[in-house]
Image 1 (cartoon, rainbow, N blue to C red):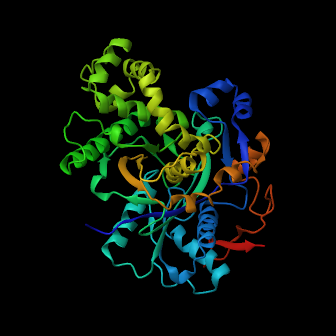
Image 2 (cartoon, one colour):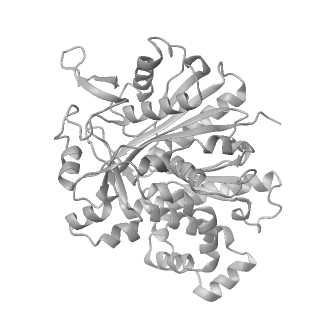
Image 3 (cartoon, rainbow, N blue to C red):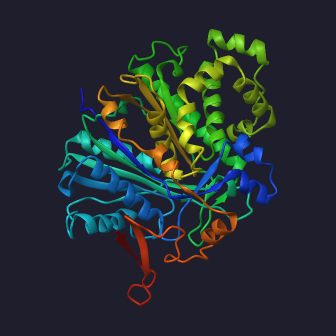
Amino acid sequence: MGKIVGVDDIAAYVPKLYVDAEELAEERGIPPSKLTRGLGIEKLAIPDAHEDAATMAAMATLEIMERNDLSPKDIDFIQVATETGPDAAKPISCYVQGMLEQIYGQGSFDHIGAPETKFACVGATYAVIDRLAYIASGWNKAEYSIVVATDIARYELNSSGEPTQGAAAVALLLKENPRLLAYEPEFTGFGTVDDRDFFRPIERKTAVVDGQYSVGCYLRDMRIAADAYKQNMLRLGVLKSPKESVADKIDLAAFHSPFPKMVQYAFASFLIHDWRGLPKWKKILEAIGPEPDRKGLSDVEFYISEEYKNFRRKFAKTEDFQREYESKIENSLIALRQIGNSYTASVWLGVESHFETRNEDLAGKRFGVGSYGSGSSAIVCSFIIQPEYKEVTKKMNLMDKLSKRKRIPIDVYEDLHESRRKFHESVIPPKNEFALVSLGNQSHNYGYRYYKYIK
């Protein structure tokens, strides 16, 4: 049997500012219920003028190191996953290194590896798998590696994507014999298709997204990855027959959340596929009617067809679905409804949200992760919650942070969105945090970003 590796701790950073979803809806002439009920969004996290994906990553990393009383010599990799980095060449991980050395001393992290991973919203999960494989190999030179997911989801003002913005960073502390989550690498499934559902050309500040088409890509890739996960469970004897349900082996789960209602779509589609052919499925079909005919449609076309969406809605109203959803998924969305989309960080915020909002004993339970990134790829993997997990989760503080933020009016949000406020014109002046303090303006450093820890 190989080494047990996994996630030892999780720390999240969320900007201190937010926009109220109902206020944004009213300003844009949208029924507020379309955002709060239709998308499941209540608040959108908004970075202040001095913040970017690098400062958020550094703040999350600093918190996880201080919480666990770690020194630089305890770390051999800081790997950052992002799709909204401020530099097309230099990785955020090196900016993070420089910021941390303002705390721990110049050169204190010069021994680390510091790559950056990019694959839209699935990048952090790829980075976690990458680092855990490295630790399992025994090649690591220090006890811990850190993976940081950091992103700012930004769309054009007045666009259909505007209500699905958000921002956050999550630092994941990885090691052998973790206290929180032990990875099950043997079951991991992948689904990858070259597609155009969402992308951001180099010259653009905001992404190009084909919303409904992207929903179809998400569901298609997640089905491919879930099938691979099931085949691995069958191959290793955890499932004895193809007619058994994968969902029965998962105790709780988190999915990537571009908007919270998408998680319901994903979980409903997963269960439709997973339960098809089971005795309970026949009873469900008797209650809601037959599945729609594909009529020669491609996977994506079928998943976004009105016939399939109507069937999925009816299924989502059944007691069988509601019971699974409430027991396994709902808690992952409590924090996400208050943050919005954070791309790579999203699914891992969902993981932390579960731990901070559940009171029952979770030791020994299987935690499923469904991660998706446009372009496109999905990962379905799982972890076992460890006996010592409570000594870790009692120090988590995401929900407390969310309760202490400042609501900003729409005009201030728009100024921040359009960069009309410069980095020295923060809504809340930085204190005890990293901040962008200047941009290079000489030929040798034009546009280079300089950061400082402000006490």
